[in-house]
Image (cartoon, rainbow, N blue to C red; front, side, top):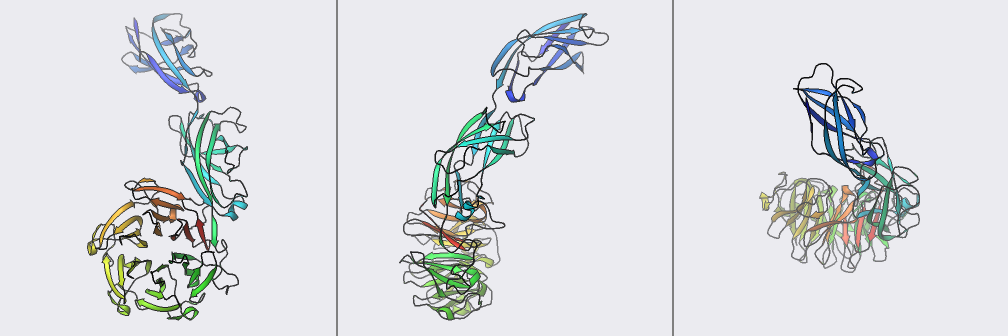
Length: 544
């Protein structure tokens, strides 16, 4: 009677934290066997447990068994030769036959294979930092985690002194471990009292199975860029009004923002139904409208009325244009504060082209104005891009009213989903936020999608980058595009070479049901101004 063992040689790799482990061996018997069959394993190298083996019949005189490794094998390679005996009794006193089987088993260490996101970017408000609630999540992929471990721990070192160190961080499992690789998530706590601005450095992360972290299993590094936001205007989560008539000077639901040539910033203070003006030093005043009095009235300064204005833009002469969304009109404010209706007739909605009050809009959203005084409007519920020439002459540049979609094309053949923010480059190309995409519209009305598509959060080349319902958009003097990626709670940058990166955020903690930031503007020095409709503030971030 002969015994053939397979696979030959027997090989396998196991994580030390998951020992003992087993390998399956098949035994093929040639010859006649009557009655029960038993097996015995011998291993002079003591890699596998020795003694009786359970055999499981597979048919045709073929059996399978599991060889079990030792529980305390050292790291590295273990080689040897097994001797397996086939017997007719439990104690193997009646041996039917035997065979040898060479083996090579490798024992791997538990290890930290990656920490992400890399780089780790986040932003917070000073108030949240002071309250200790600005915890920054990070992910760790660990190879070889013990099957019985419900959680593991991490310890960090931070030469930059941005995050708290010393205490072990509990890493919670995320999903099911597959082949020894497990995903975990932990939270980093910033140091209280960090100064406003960007804090950069590199964390050293150790992973352990004990909270004291006496025996680290792996170490990795994680670069970070953590921003404490500078509130330029307003008090976080404390509504006010530009003239202080509500009890305090501030903002209430600010959306669109735009600079003039002198460095003044104008804001569509949406929930106040007013337009505010902010000097370069941060002094806020009322330009037009009256807080809380929603209507459609042309006039001087505070005698004028607006209804939920969404965006503002300026021209070289210092005029301020307003998408008066609730009134379905586009308004203009002269440098002297006189408000007039440029196009549309409040509160009527529609999609008609025409001059002045003969034209119709349906929730005009974003605004941009070129050097010749042409205004461009994202007519959101009509899913079109409109142009208003000097004198109030309205035409449709791209899209077809009510024909929603994501189709590129020219003029009426192109489709938009729900266009929001809009910005102009030096060649008068428009960049439009539409759903989770960034679209470009040439002066001839040719529409192409330059980035995004489905909702997501992916940096990299524009061909693969993803956004999540962004709102505002702006360009700097070098042609970089900045996107307020509202439902990813961050600011993204698209370079002229077509590379997308995250330059501010994500914001932590995420306010309930909040979109942050809302609109964006770029100052002459390259710094970014961000409106926060939930926090009632405008944030200033140094040039990314």
